[in-house]
Length: 301
Image 1 (tube, rainbow, N blue to C red):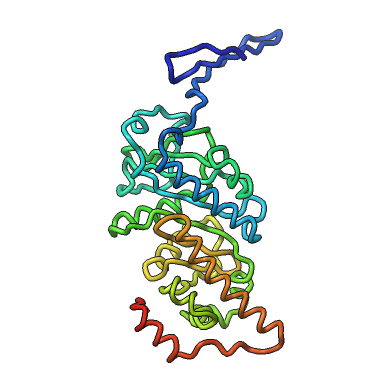
Image 2 (cartoon, rainbow, N blue to C red):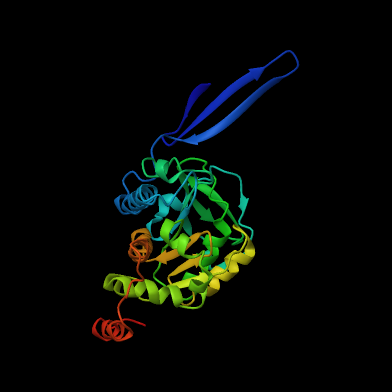
């Protein structure tokens, strides 16, 4: 592999491979080794939060192998230089047309990548993509050609709806919290707001910090359009949605906000399961006590 300078920002690397039948010369154009995060402290701070949350997901046991996904709208940090960056990938179809996302930029966890690795090397286990003017395709612009999650259409569909409704939410997180998934195996918990009420009643912080509760999507094939559509519908009323026997999907102001809501719900699930393991049904806060919280803290429900 040989290396030739091309201006100050790019390098051409070329390699020659040959055997008795043919000669093959392959050219690659790479941006220099500098990361898009350099000299962009605000963008770096957002990606650092993604890495921090990825570490929490792994440490909690919620991100086995390559499980889970994170997608963050970073358009606000895309300056003129980023807008001029050439693509480092071919044009890729999203699989759906999303007019609200024209010209937007997203950080996406890479397909097949592990949260434990993303926590240490976020730009080697995820990439920043640009949505093209047709609103149906994208290119990778930084740092490496890491293909986004296979669930990208679902995540981007949610982000498009957030923009269309004027929401200030910028992040989506999908993960597999053990105790919450366990509770989804009890069908009596899956009726509307049954699980919400149980979880709210375990500890006041859960109602305070996840005030919309937990939506429920019945088991649907992972990665399917049906799952994406059902999730989008539930997210109209909830910030966190349980996928029966699978995991949760959350939206938030940023990735930490989305994680925090999952975290408090998971704490309540642990309290409930620990009480049952000790041989009793936890009493929980009463309806009157929860109504008092709603009034005192001006909660939406």
